[in-house]
Image (cartoon, rainbow, N blue to C red; front, side):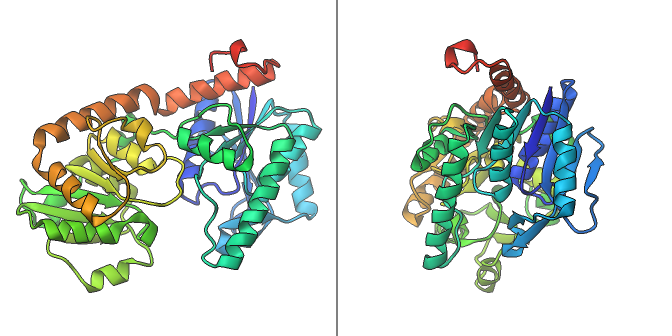
Length: 390
């Protein structure tokens, strides 16, 4: 089969959707199928190439709105020439990443016109934030119009978590299932560096480490996490914050004892950090579909403390898998951190259970098998759930 993935952003741009697209496309090639990725043009990159994984990549001209966060298709001779080459590949299934981009709309409508089955994989649990009330209202109206048009095209919707499927109901969409965000534990093990973080920070080998990895923005809950850690006053503990963002300078101006701001780190060193951490903390309120760092922490054998973000209930169904709190309030973070640092038996059990759950349900192999099952259902014309074990 020929799988055509439409992703408004793709490598070398790094993000959750980009890695998701890469990993599924790569595994389709490994399974003996052809994988095409259609994405936005980036300066200095060719309009068409084949990468080292055997994935064909086509890049379409765009207007890079919102500093490139929101690429909008640019109809021009180069655009029409490139899409003609794409459709000449005769895709069997179009896989559209997220519901909101102009590329997503183009893919769904073009697939319908060519009678090619299309699925939309949604990755968020909220509207795109625009930081101004008027812009937020305009953006939400746009999202509803685009999503409604894609729904009426006959595309089938899936979410990267159950929470995403619930969110799609906001647009009048009934998702047909999940295609989970995932990781490959063996790949992570191979990529992780040998860096010893305790040694690098001149900490005792016995120091208990709590770790945050991600963008330093208010929605990620770093500030209340730091405040709760500071109030604990637990000797032999440290909080390591890896990442960059607009809130980082403010936090660095008022340093707390035992808190280390590491800035942006190379991915191999970040994985080493998760492997050496005692607990991974993600007190986020951000509208994510299924944070990859939760999966990476579980794969690295790290106990997890997080808010009820999308996907967390599926990875951590109860306290024996990890600690989930309702919000990043200090009054909730404080006792959760206390337990995470002081209950070694809980940490070991939670880390073991979360990793076992991940190995059963949240690996790229499992998600790739599910995608192949979904593809068989639609390409064979089987539209009813009873026709397929997917």
